[in-house]
Amino acid sequence: MRLQLNAGVARAASAIAMGSLLVGLAGVAHAQPPSTEPASADAPAAAPVPPAVAVEGAVAPARRYTVRASSEVGGYADTDHVFVVTPTVAGSVADPVAGWSVDGRYLVDVVSAASVDIVSTASRRWEEVRHAGTLGGTYKPGTFGVSVSGAGSFEPDYTSLAGGVLLAQDVLDKRLTVLAGYDYGHDVAGRTGTPFSVFSHAIDRHGVKGGASLVMSRSTLVTALVDAVFESGDSSKPYRYIPMFAPGTEVARGASIDTVNALRLAERPLEQLPLSRDRYALTLRLAHRFSASTLRLEERLYHDTWGIDATSTDARFVVDVAPRLQLGPHARVHAQTPVDFWQRVYVVGPGYDFPALRTGDRELGPLVNLTAGGTLRVGLGPSDAPRRWLLGLDVNVTSTQYLDDLYVTHRVSAVSAITLEAEL
Image (cartoon, rainbow, N blue to C red; front, side, top):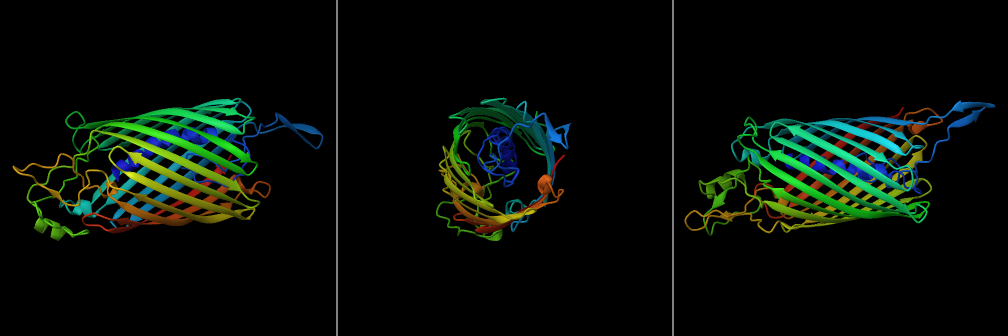
């Protein structure tokens, strides 16, 4: 869970920049995408605001600045006894005339876990609090724009810092936007109660991205993004001990803790992962606005030098049921192959020679997961602008099949979030 949470911080840094730039693309009507999405494909054009408007023969100043604020409470729970509560606050200020915007987010993760991985090491329930924040800014007065972003995450045994820059150039009368960016992340992993000066692992990440967004028509937007991330450092988990077995020992998929303890040897070395990892991804997105609904489709292909190949397909459909009500379903399918060094049963060689690379992280093994859920948005604003205040609810349930793992073969998890957004 820890590495998954902190990996999200690095993605959030570049997501701020990406979302801030793409929000200015024209041609697709607003349909309130989730706040964590890196690209607001269905956001409206940031139309210039006139300095004054006529009201009953008089000239009154228009609202030049756009100020938004939101608060969210999210929750995660799964059948492996992991629970997370995440309160979040966020805000943004933008001047569409000058072409600049600034936004930020702060969250707290409260994690409580008694998963099979923890119980199998005779440990009690694990509890931890993580603080994380992101800050970004964009300046795009014309056809060229630049965004900068930063993120930080802090917990007792893990610190993560990240920052990035994204450039965008509009061409073809702003129908095509070309994107290029770079981001850097630095993580330090340790042990709770032990100073980093005594024990720590450093992980560095360099990421580059490029892509383009094409306005196909007033209602259709297509985006293609290519990402490459180059990691160096030891990301092995300092709490994960790997059960070892004698040659010829057979252990069934999903074997219980008691069965594994009865068959394994006394030796339990720590996890050891490769000291570098290169990741590559291609993401294609399509957003189409119908007369009273928005369809968003996404396909992501992934490969890394550890041997994982993955595909993720995501679909969202949001319907404007009424001026104050939007709702729609969400579905996602993800499948991946294991890392090259994956073994359900790690065997000790002659002379107690442990495998050089070993892991018990089932998220690095072969798996398939299916997600189904939905989105609800209710406008609470005044009659002339009902979506100036929005109350949102998102619920998603995921069923994951682990195809070659000890202890767990199936897990069901649920993620939910209640959000209140306001344009002030």
